[in-house]
Each structure stands twice: as C-alpha cells, then as structure tokens.
Amino acid sequence: MKTTIFKEKHEAMGGKMVPFAGFIMPVQFEGINIEHQTVREAVGVFDVSHMGEIWVEGPKAYELVQRVSSNDIAVLDEGKVQYTCFPNDKGGIVDDFLVYHFSREKYLLVVNASNIDKDFNWLQEQNKSIGATLRNASDETAQLAVQGPLAMKAMQKLTDEPIEDMTFYTYKVLEFAGVKDVLLSTTGYTGAGGCEIYFPNDAGLQIYEAVMEAGKEFGIKPIGLAARDTLRLEMGFCLYGNDIDDTTSPIEAGLGWITKFTEGNNFVNRENIEKQKQEGVSRKLIGFELLDKGIARQHYPIVDAEGNNIGEVTSGTMSPSLKKAIGMGYVKPEFAKSGTEIFIEIRGKANKAVVVKRPFK
Image 1 (cartoon, helix red, strand yellow):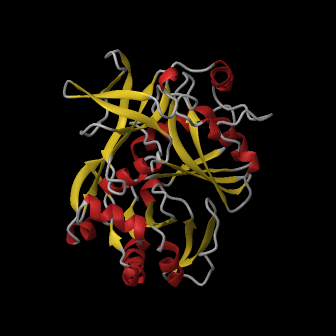
Image 2 (cartoon, one colour):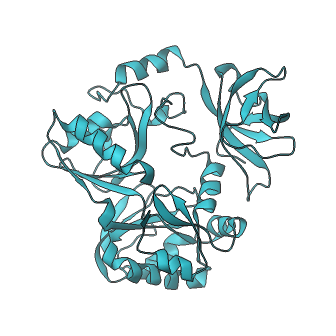
C-alpha cells in the first residue's frame, strides 16, 4: 500500500486510517457528521495527494487531449480548468478527470487515484499515432483540497496574489505559504466552494501546517474520505467505480453536458455516443430520496410497484445536511422522471422512494 506524505500527521491528529485506492488514507477524524457540516458551514482540509497528475506537453499536446476528452478543450484559455471524461472504445468511461490548460502545448490532467496506471496506459495507447509528450507526475505531487464557504478567505492569508475573487474552475500559479510555483485552483468535489492546491511532496508539511494555522480562526478541521463521499453525494456528483465505470456511457450517466459534439472534436467513440444521444439509452442515472426508513447501498436492486427489477443503486447514504436517506442509481428511462415512485430492495423488503433532481435538497 502507498502512503501520502501526510500519513504520520493524520495519525497524530487521530485519523482513522484505511486502505483506499491502493493508499492508506484517513477515512475520518472526529466523525462523519461533524466533518461534513464543518465543510458545509466553515472550512475543512482533505488530503487528496492520492489523486493522479499527468502532464501532456509538446506540439501535439492539444491533439491528444482533444482526442481522449469527451469535452471540447478548444474553448479553454490559459488559467481555465475543465471537467471531462475519457470515453473508451466500447461505450463506457475509462475515467473522469480535470484538464488544466496552460497552453496548446501544455496540459495537466488530474485523474482518480484508483485509475492512475490504467489512465496513463490508455493515454499512451491513444498517443501512438499522435506523438505528444506524456509524464506521470503522480508520485512526486501532493494535493490538498481546502473546501467550504470560508476556505478562500482563510487561504488568502497565505499568498499576496488575490484569490478570493477567482471564478469557479480557474487556476493560478503563485507563491503560497512561502513556497513558489504552487498551483491553486477553484475546484473541488464538495459543492461547498474552496480550492485545490498542488505542490511538490517536499513542501507538503510546510504547506499543511500553514493551511491549518491560517484556517484556525475560521474553525478549520482535517476531513476524511467518508465525509468527502457524503458531501459529493449530496451534490449528485458521480464517483468513479460507483456511478460511472467502463460499462456506463456519458449519456447514460447524465454527463451529456461534458460530451461535446462540436465540429472537429473527434473524440474516441464519438460516433456511437452521438448515436446514443440521438436515439436514447436503455438506462439513466437518477437521484432518489427514500420515503420509507432505511439506507440504500451500492448494488441494492431498484424495483417498480409490482416488484419488477428496473435498475440498481450505485451510491447511497444518510445525508448529514438534509437528515434523510438519498442515493443514485440506474433505472429504465421510463422511471427516470422527477417525481416517479420507485422502490429500493433493502434486505428483502421494498422501501418506497421517489426520483428527485440533483443536487439533493
């Protein structure tokens, strides 16, 4: 198992360490509900150094990224970030990721920890006929996600560069906590606002301690992966391996908004995915709220009023903010409309639920 540079610090802070995506990571510190509400109401810091960072550079960088990305990077300027996915050649998704545009000859791709090797191999395969320069910098790069409505106010104390007015999905390279060339972006996986910060491993402890000190007056706390999951689920964000994978298409997953069929955007498997958009799909990802008692979990069957199987749960939890059980799953299209009554099978019992729009409210 791999570790991040913050492992000993997490343990000293009382973090409960568990295996995750090949790493030993903190699943929680004080408790899921406390950590969740800290991010929603104030500011929390996540160690996300397990995430992957892959650089694509050279005269062919634009061509490769445009080829592998479902989104259209032609609209990106320097300082902009884009959410997208790698469509595979079988109709599914290799991974979802972020693209940082530095220039037409330099991009940073931030991928999921569990898929780093798979993604890099996929990029190498697609690059054979293109010839961009690829570099996997994952092992040398640390990352912190500082999230919450007070995050940017707290982090402004650590840099002279103005960051509080940065718009969503933009980045700056700046001096931060005394460390030069730190990448700070207004991205995150919580829906609570804030930033993600990238820097070399050897600057990690210096930056972590500075972040915690700067956030002290705002009630900053370390946050574990469990609260990260409940926060993203409340927003209806997809988690790779749960809601999307090698068998789910972007159209089925409701990711048509990051799948751009613009002229010249000839991404992998475009023809088949465009056909899905035009002709429809056999299942759709929905959000639902349980009306009966119980909590939906991944792989629980979704059935109709007569008990016929119509789909499967992909994610589910008891929402700390909303105080109700919520979840996501795939169902037949005729059951995907908001307000539709469905049932989740929990230990052999059909529990009533209703399809709702995301983010959950």
